[in-house]
Length: 136
Image 1 (cartoon, rainbow, N blue to C red):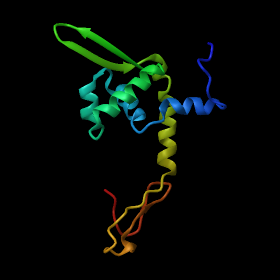
Image 2 (image 1 turned 60 degrees about the vertical axis):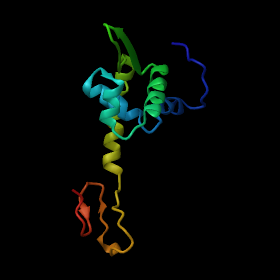
Image 3 (image 1 turned 120 degrees about the horizontal axis):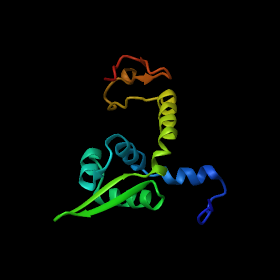
Image 4 (image 1 turned 60 degrees about the horizontal axis):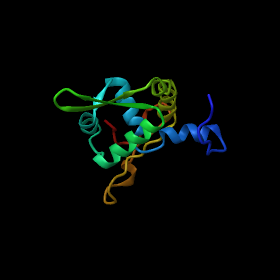
């Protein structure tokens, strides 16, 4: 397979450029779990994404060969998005990346300044909460 317009000095940079972006991994995961989805379905499931950003992220994923856009006209125009084989090949990597995130994250509850800062809680590597505030 011949590289297309190689613009990176490192293969890892090239790979990361495909999934960089606030919503790309979310989109990929939703399509992996739910199969084909319409634009409006994706937007409703994500919730806090604007139409402009969702459209931009989908176009980039389509351009990179991760997502396929299918248009059908059965009396009413219907556009659906689903993962390509190339997009599905990324799933095991994203699963491992998610595992790493869970194992290495350290969350801190941010509380208003009038609350005693001893009420903050940290999560240890094993996910157990320390401190006096419970994270539900």
